[in-house]
Amino acid sequence: MDIKNYMQDLGRQARAASRLMAAASTEAKNTALCAIAAKIRERAGELLAANARDLEQARADGLEPAMLDRLTLTAKGVETMAAGLEQIASLPDPVGEITDVKRRPSGIQVGHMRVPLGVIGIIYEARPNVTADAAGLCLKSGNAAILRGGKEALHCNQAIAACVREGLEEAGLPAAGVQVVETTDRAAVGELITMPAFVDVIVPRGGKGLIERISRDARVPVIKHLDGNCHVYLDDAADAAKALPIVENSKTQRYGTCNTAESLLVARSQAPALLPAIGAMFESKGVEMRCCPESLAILSANPSLTRLLKEATEADWSEEYLAPVIAIKVVAGLDAAINHINTYSSQHTESIVTENYSHAMRFLREVDSASVMVNASTRFADGFEYGLGAEIGISTDKIHARGPVGLEGLTSQKWIVFGNGEVRK
Image (cartoon, rainbow, N blue to C red; front, side):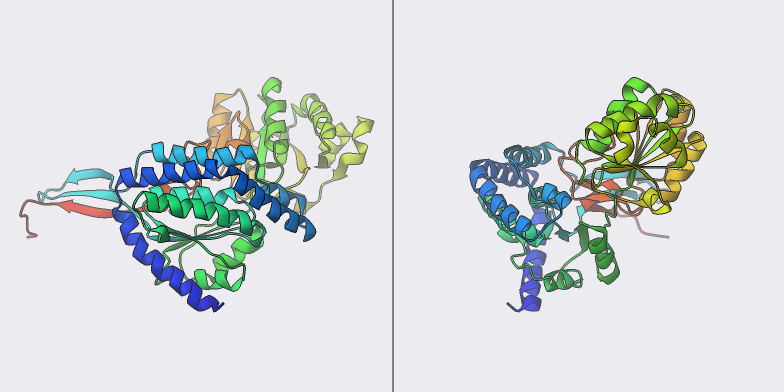
């Protein structure tokens, strides 16, 4: 295969389709979304069989447990994909929305209209559900999409892509509105990120190495999703009944996700009371604890924890483990917690457990991350949980889109002017 010509052909088709997608009615887009959801449910067996082929090859290739977890598609996962598409269909259509109209002294009225970005290139690893989520969000926001999934999920991605194509055609929309790259050749990524004539924005989803490469080499704008070193801080005013389940869920519900907590901070006044129970919970789940000297001293009082305790290094405070490992540090209080988070976090998601309103509001204002929470698990940092239907990724950028990127994040705004014959004097 001539990769350059192949990708240029995809780009040309996507650019032509983007004009039709931008002009598509809300009814047509919703019809397509519901048709795709129906086909995903109808072909659940085929999707799971394709995923099993991918998993068999991935295990043979020695894929790491965290990546295998991301790659695995279950019957529940298939239903979640379909339900996510239907939820996107139920959301308001952002395209064409007019806001902020104001009359100027000249008599003209000036406002904003929300419009699609155009052609969105999405590069992702392992997770087959991204194919459906990305297709649905790009479709509803009036964009065309070129999706390049990881080689690990090739068979499942192609099976989902067939559902997407047929759903688009049933609704009278161009099949090229969503295209899945069929080659696993890495050169395809290099072409996709250097085609400004055909691609308007790139969204990479995957490991830090992939995202750093894309950001370095791309010739089109990139919406970045870097690593998720997420924190839970147990404040001086933390409620112990809330603290343990929030820490447990944030860290142990799933280890291989970007919104999993990787660092636990505990106020010094609460550490002797809270850490023993937290340590016992982590011990029951086999979670290794990399501790500051103060937290290590408290947790070492329980001999059964010894095998899971290690002294933290400076690198641990910045680490995204994606594994049953967590960094634990005792801090003086709120000021020290905020300073630690703003120094070491990846600006993804942070949570405070507290009953002190002033502390909660300071944490919300002063922690510089895309999602900041009070008395809730970091695992809620997710497009589906935020009511976006799904997400294209979780941006740690500050410009254009931040946090879970849904429909609004896949659109831009243009200025519009209403006049009645006015001329400038």
